[in-house]
Image 1 (cartoon, helix red, strand yellow):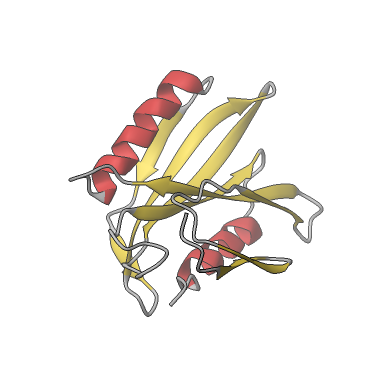
Image 2 (image 1 turned 30 degrees about the horizontal axis):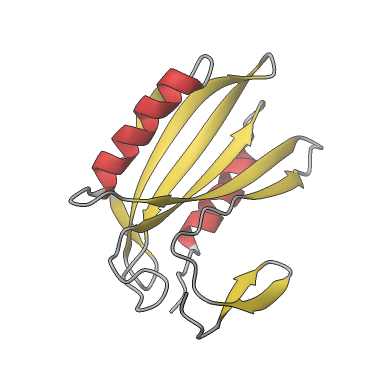
Length: 155
C-alpha cells in the first residue's frame, strides 16, 4: 500500500487515506420537491474493463439490470454528449423498474471521468448518477439535469 495520503472528500468533509484501488462508494441523497413528492439521487461508481468504452459499459450494465431487477426495461437513450469544463462523455437513459411492488422511473446518467494522475490514471472510472422516483415530476427532472450539467470532476 502506498503510504502517501490524499484527501478523500465526501459531502460531510474529508479524511486522509492512500488512494483506493477502486472506489465503489454509493451515495443516496433523499429529497422532497415543493409538492411533497419524495425522490432520490443515487451516485454509484463504475470501472470500465480493458478496451471497453462508455457505450459498451452502459450496455453491459443494462444487461445486468435486465437479469437482476424485476420489471427492468430500457425506455429511452439519448445520444452521447459532453458536459462541463472537462468535457466528460455522458450517456443518459430512462429506465422503468419494479421496486417493492411499485413502478419507478429511473433517469440515469453515465459519466466517463477524465484521466487524473492519482484518482483515474488509466481513464477507466465513471460515475452513474440516477434519479429514482415513483412519480416523476418536472421539478425532480430539472434538479437531476442541473446535477448532470454542473458536474465537475476532481482536478
